[in-house]
Amino acid sequence: MKNASIKLTHFIIGGFDTVKMPVAVGVVMLITYLLAVLASLVNIIFIVSDKQLHKPMYLLICNLAVVDIFYTSTATPTMIGVLLAGVNTISYVECLIQMYVYQVGVTMERFSLTIMAFDRLIAIIYPLQYHSYLTITRTLVFTYILWIVACSFVLFTLVTATPLPHCYSRLRYTFCDYAAVMRTTCVDPEKYFNQVAIISFFLSFFTFTFICLSYCGILFFVKILSNNDKKKMGSTLVSHLICVICLYCPQFIIVILTRFGVVLTLEERQGLLIGTILAPSLVNPFVYCLRTKEIKSKIFKIFRKVNTAG
Image (cartoon, rainbow, N blue to C red):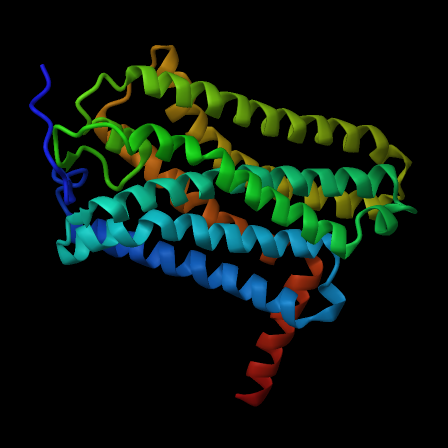
């Protein structure tokens, strides 16, 4: 039985009420967040400042770094504020904005990894025509289009959540994601959850399937490459695969398996949700820093200069 609807001015974030050591958890999240943002900024600065890296693959890595900063910044500062500063309220408008930009971030993470797989597929199948097919201009246009599509695609969450009356002001989860906001409304949210699960399933299925098919195409054509090129391509694929696993596995459990009867405790869901935000944003930049030869060599040069100066 739902309560009478109320006029909301703010929400109370209650997702961390049962955390036994909030300061310790907050410090860990703060350090992780700062490392993720710093590592992504390093990638962006290296790629933007070096004209030799102004190539489609590196522009896509740069875009992924921008997406990582955007994605992790949609919710992590709010959670850190709750844990370390005790600021557990957020205005109604800010909450809806956070819900929307978080969904944009999730969608762009998928799109970014998909277009990176497409880039490597073209590089393998059409090595001689690669630079004429995927020019810098076309890569930038593709990236802009993906941002526009992502921003338009997730308007569904705002369109469905905004008109509904609210009976509660307390959010069960750790920030304003769609499920948290919908559970404060006076309607049965299951219908809306199922709609979002269907949309999310097809989005995840399309992007993940495309990535897998790209891997298959790359593995099929890689046999014609020289041993050195095979090694370089294998390193690129491993880097990409690590990023894909970090993003898709927790999301698959939260969004898809829970719709098919898998029951998660509130703490398990919170942990997976926080993991889907922090893990990709932390892992992605370090993977591409350490496994991309050109970026790694630039880092080593900087360290050598610092050691020489010291």
